[in-house]
Image (cartoon, rainbow, N blue to C red; front, side, top):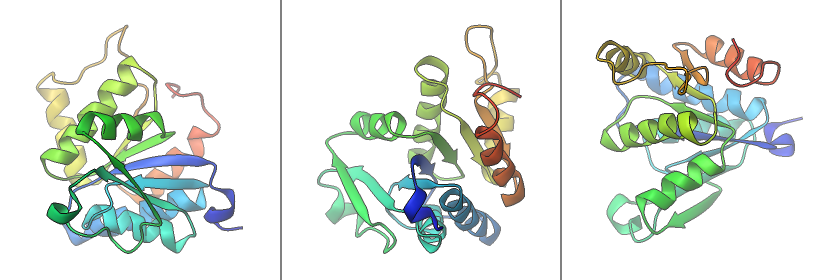
Length: 190
């Protein structure tokens, strides 16, 4: 059975329009495919680069792909990638981020620009204060950012703000293991 017929979970994907490398673009596509195979539908920004790669992977395995964007940005930002099967247009960045985070069972963040950084920090804040939605940072660029945030103490664990929801995946194999563990381990567990 393909992902389209069993997609009962939703993953939000944050990634930039300019992949840092061909390897990261390939990883994004493989992540999209792994999500679909695990029964996830995909929410993403709808545009090119890593978003398109993840959407291509999800679509190849039959998952629905929804572009989540802002009202009135279509002319400025261009058409959605061809893998988007639906779209949601929201009035502002806050509504857009809330839509992502309120409707996802899993967040994946890869490298990107300031928009991706904004999405990632919103997801981490949401997971520490609202609901511990799992957040997976994937690819070398995102892992370097995470190391910097930890080293500079922008991100650290406390008893009131545990970071058990946060995972890293440098490879597709590790990402698939995280997905499998999500369905056998409680959120925040080892």
